Image (cartoon, rainbow, N blue to C red):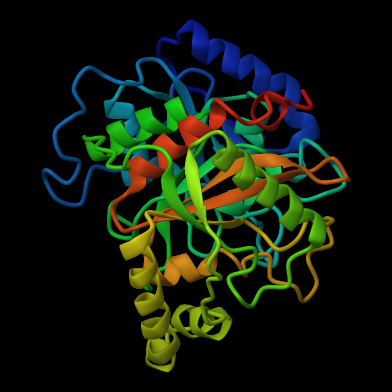
Length: 375
């Protein structure tokens, strides 16, 4: 692991985070670099004023966080978090050169390992970020999500993961599929992240129970029975607690697989029909219900050899095409002892509302689905 020798003050929270990283990361390989006292500076914004005014009141004073991959420290979110008083302590693992994009991260100590089952992947591509948060190394890590790269590792590591509305934050992805996101230990931390990076936090959920549509498969995905069961039970717990009112109407989208691949491959003209139809269906859904609930993935965490021909992204990438914000919240565990995520999707711009629903869900889910950790 590359340790950057820099000078500067540290605080207690940062020192404790560095100690946990030193103790836990050799077995998990969540980090590629660790910054013992202060992070290297990223480049200045492209244009004066790009970062906007600093958040008022430094909402994250002294809070340690990690950045996704080697370029994360140069990103907009990292600059905003630092302006809010947070302290970057390292960069996290992403898939290495030649690693298939669907699979694991590659950290300083080899493949990044799922903290619940070391023989399984944590998901990707924000692999190290999810593992670092799940094991308590740090409470907050940046991510990016072009097909599910925040939500899938959040689901498989048992943490909260938010993919923000397309265009809410700057993104280097010219296809428009990838949006900035966050992996957080809890909803309060995700709330502070949104305040820091956007300068505002304005949820607009109606009073509880919030109308919500449950879909086990979006009409096309082949979802494992146990994954569907765990996610559905989480949705039912939310309904029983009065947080949501589930709509029994079936809800289907067109399978976005070929459409996503066409857009990513630089051929968006081949994707217009399916994309337009799904946009229409989603607009109709959010006109009657503020939330859509699904499992995050159709499958359980797979081994380090990869998922084979199966797309772990089949329930997530529709919302990269549509640009909607989407979150993964811990739903429970499958029979193998691996976490399962419940996906919550909302209308454009309703990122804060998703975090508020996650915060409400924390109060009624089993404590083990939120705070248990293998370390």
